[in-house]
Amino acid sequence: MSFFKKSTRYEVEQFGGFGIFTLLFFIFLYAPIIILIIFSFNENSSATIWTGFSLDWYRTALENDGLRSSAWNSVFIATVAGGISTIIGTFAALSTSRRAKWKGKKATFGSIMLPLLLPEIVTGVALLAFFSAIGLSIGRGNLIIAHVLFCIPFSYLPIRARLDGMDDSLEQAAMDLYSNEWRAFFKVTLPLLMPGIVSGAMLAFIVSMDNFIISLLVAEAGSTTLPIFIFGMVRMGVTPDVNAVSTLILIVSVAIFSLAHLIERKR
Amino acid sequence: MRVNGDSAILINGLRKVYESTENGVVALKRADLEVLCGEFFTLLGPSGCGKTTLLRLIAGFEYPTEGEIHLFGKNIANLPPFKRPVNTVFQNYALFPHLTVAENVAFGLQGLKKAKSEVAEIVTEMLEMVHLGHLADRHPDKLSGGQRQRIALARALAPRPEVLLLDEPLSALDLKLRQAMREELKRIQEQTGITFIFVTHDQEEALAMSDRIAVMSEGQIQQIGTPEEIYESPSNQFVANFIGETNLVNIEVVGVNNGTVECSVAEGLILKCTNNHNVVSGDKRTLSIRPENIRFVDPSTSGALPCKLIEKTYIGTDIQYQVALADGVELRLREQNTWRDGKDRCSHALGDELAIDVPVGATQILAD
Ligand SMILES: Nc1ncnc2c1ncn2[C@@H]1O[C@H](COP(=O)(O)OP(=O)(O)OP(=O)(O)O)[C@@H](O)[C@H]1O
Ligand SMILES: [Mg+2]
Image (cartoon, rainbow over all chains, first blue to last red):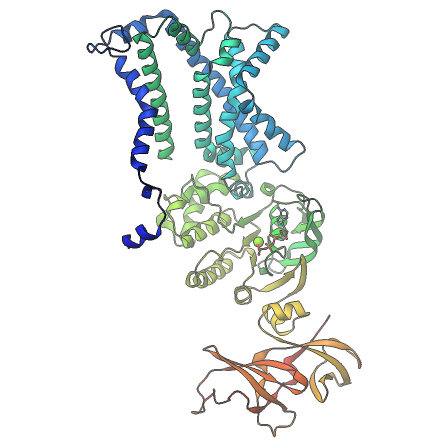
């Protein structure tokens, strides 16, 4: 059997050098990250010469007030903006995937996806001009509004994909069994949609945590986000405490992804 | 209390045009139909003829373009599905994957806001009825196709609907299971006394299970009647052709006497049949003759038609022959492949000159 499989199937592994190429690719992808993690434990303040193991840089990083407050800022903004954009994304997905054809459906779909295509710098400048034009200055509020804007497509897409893959005869069955629209939604649509909503919320959270350009333009004094603060630190030269912070962020991201994966597997 | 024989569903001038495409699709041209209380009523027709559309209009998933649907005298055509005491067994079952079997069956009862104890009682009773009480705590994805089918049935029957709608519920099952489920469905229908409206494109299924059948084609109802009526007296060519096998022969009426008609098929070839459509001399019509009603006879018998055997097919229970009569007219006939007095039933050979008899009562003049 395996004889036939090998000789008749066209496998990409048959190309010479495929294994080596794959290995090089992964080194290219992960080597910088691994070096960053290793040097975050360096005793010395150099980012290139290893002298010994220590956790000093983690202590330095965690004792940095500016870093702590900007991290807290980022988490707060990502949670609120991610939450709001997930709610909006859910409703948008429901009305573009479940409602019968209505005028402007295509245009609506397009305008939901638009922030993905617009250069961030354009969105950022436009928001900055808009906020100053209407005189809106509510600190973190400005950042939250901006983040909701570009998070919507990221939370919308997984929810929409989940809905499209869901047979609408389930909702019809619920209505057939004496459920009005609300009961059908809460008892059938929402529970089945949950994995999509969780993915959407996570994506939005991470995209918001990660954002730099728009945040930099929109942020007011006193509402710095973590990426902006780290950028400020790096400008003074890369010190191992930046490595330590980056490693911490990496750990948190991996933890969030693993958790979401576990939740989905459990269903 | 509903009495068997009352009109359960009465449909008047029902029409459905789907507006989703540019010009709209006319799925149902015009349907008029009455289903009686306690009846096992079947909608039968080829793919795309509008069966599902008609069922969805009754269930409330679609609203009619025109026309009325009365359920025990009340017009329900514009009520949402959750206000209609009608339940559906979906073709793909549509069981809720996140709920257990018992929760699935309880769903409709909870929708009706029944007391907890009553819900539990009915769920147990329903699961017992479909012999799946031991699976109450399973999830639907851990059931076989046949088991899902039964749960879908139990779920739809639990709220005791006035009418149960079933859209090709057996089509996803294999042959053996399908035959077992036919009997099961029939038993449950008799046991509960609930009116069933059953959709299928399988004529054997329809003939075996139904009290009455509506044959549909191209968005129209072609004929409504008992299985016998539909098979024995098809009212038009479509029905005659769709239900079972038949020979369709173009004829001209050449003589009418005492309810018997003489039909000229070709030069010198006259068939006699009963005048069930009040035809008169000179009418041109189509005749339907079922293959199993034609017999080989001794050429000397009076009224025997000489013919030549041109094709013979052995199909196990039957042997199917094709014979040529005068003027190139061909007929198909079937003989049961039974052992009789040692006589070999397959004795006719291709090219043999034989004779057939077409009994007067076995032919049907079709209304055009
Ligand atoms: N939602 C819809 N939008 C547009 N056209 C539709 C829709 N649903 C059905 N149709 C069309 O209406 C006609 C009747 O469809 P219907 O589903 O009622 O057929 P059916 O008899 O149930 O066929 P089948 O045996 O294949 O299930 C078909 O031509 C179909 O293409
Ligand atoms: Mg159908």
